[in-house]
Image 1 (tube, rainbow, N blue to C red):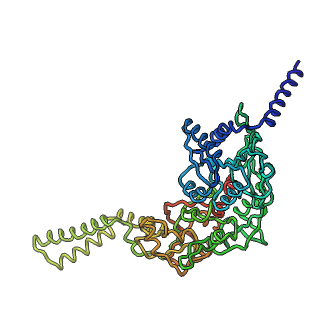
Image 2 (cartoon, rainbow, N blue to C red):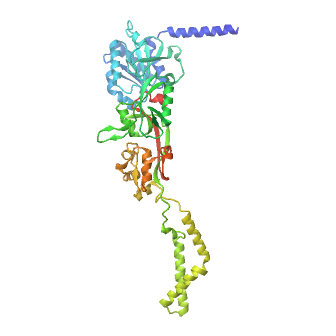
Image 3 (cartoon, rainbow, N blue to C red):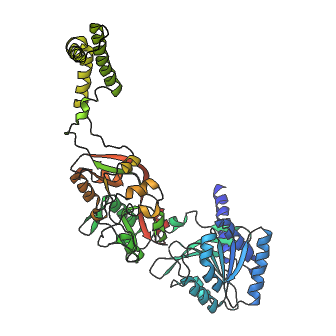
Length: 515
């Protein structure tokens, strides 16, 4: 009985799957299909894209769908391919994940759309549903069932579903940089049961292979957390890159490391350093300790933050061998010293008045003052002398090194300590994007001519000079701690640094790398 039941269930599912594969999608069901895709991706609106040379049948179809979506309270817009080229950036800036429904029916409309996709970036911004509409003979069937070249200029992160005429399968199209369209059968669609997913895996779980794609990697000479040896990389970022290449299956091409992370050169009007290589498309990713900054995001992409660290202002520890003479007076407070002095003077005056019976003699007052001072030092106040001796010894023996300030505001107010930061780094760019008046005043103390190229060089300069401050992060300092030749002290600045890997702007692998 159990065997027969299992057999019936298996036959039922076989018949169901066969029905879905052989069932065609009629043109009357297109609206329900588009609506199911809209609901699955939770898109904000539906934008129909058609040829500039549209015919009456396509116009009627689009207006029918728009009316139905209006009844469902879904916003729709109808545009042409030329409109898409001119307005795409506006959609990118102002619309959150729209659904672009592209209607293709002839070789000409397919060529128009292919030409349009060459000029719009990033193509992975919306969700795409490309529909090959049924026409006599279905002239594009071979092209949509077996795509070869990357005709629609998709990339690795593009979410484009393709419906090939009446075939009830929604196929994902994406590509790597080998100019070849790769496909994945994402779902079946039936008028009775709607969208039936073939997998529950997320986007990058489905696309977990870069098929050995070559990735050009740049880095920074002497950057913390990465090492270079015999054409390979090590350290935290180096090992992370190696693990990513194994999981994502890409080939690493290590470029020669450059000096400096990169800043905007006002004279040459270009980005320098490693960032400059990415902007010039000479590299794909950078794997040194790059600080995440908003103004850099206009030209590069970041991964998610990998390390967080506090910014500090470091100083060479003050020399404790030079004892200040003022320490001898610090044994007592100023109030105590004034009280003792007034007691001695008052006692001298009173003794003089008592001896002369009202007549004040300067010679006698001096004599009495000396006697009172002798009594104070030798006989009268042994307890005070003991307290003074103990306090003085404590001050001389336990004198700790101390900066003349303990806050950033105090450092700026003191003004005697010059400032250095890493050349061509995020810290060097601080005055261009920070409005904090304390930080702006701090950078007025910057020594432009003597900026170090590496953290190690920065701390070497710090150890060579007494009145110098080095603005960098805690993680940078800890990475080279064993190479620092002097004792270091610091004050907190209240700022946090986020470090990440950088990629070219609009890089299709950013999402996959974050995943």
